[in-house]
Image 1 (tube, rainbow, N blue to C red):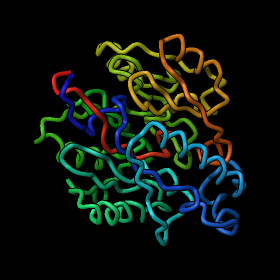
Image 2 (image 1 turned 135 degrees about the vertical axis):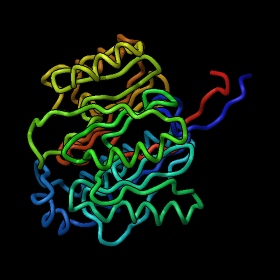
Image 3 (image 1 turned 180 degrees about the vertical axis):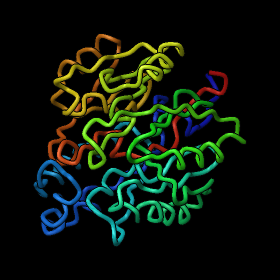
Length: 299
């Protein structure tokens, strides 16, 4: 039997430990939904009861397959967007990196993450400071020594340089993908809106919005690409959470992408996300802050 270790430097290895912020701790009541959704650029006001039901199903799927699911508590001063807990921090084997949010309404989230991590005794590797901005949705591990970062309206050049400064001494290379304007500064458009690694050599992508040089980098690294069709991009077809190699969790309503994943040898689980994902633009990678994944010591 292979000896194993735990790592934060992967998007696809078997997920052992993950943080989530339950819908009840972000969509706190109907009044908060009514007062915030427009200003936060949600597509429509989520229905609270249905959002709680959908999240219960989502959390149940995680709990059946992930040994440790850490539920972030109710914390004051956060917006509806706090549901998408990936964005406020980055997990590394050397400690957590606290982000600085590019969306002003989310500025309080990194300190909320710090409070949780310090209470658990987790080390803090560093924090992005002004004028830098960096959001976790723009960050994805390509392998254990290579981190891809999207240069977007949410993550700026100063934030990327600070991240490089934290990681370079640890032997980690940062690959930058310059993202397009697309729908502009007010839209939620991250690197992981168009990229989801689901195995060592397989990634779900939406190529029409992917920088050519970055797409070529994936191909040069040996990735095969599951291409999301145009009609399934806005329904979050390219935002897929790997629970393990080729074991995928995705929002329902993307049948062509789901079939392409199955044709590539993947097992696929789906959840209904009309209220917790589609209206706020955050799929299953956004709803989770993966912390530790299981790896063979020599694998």
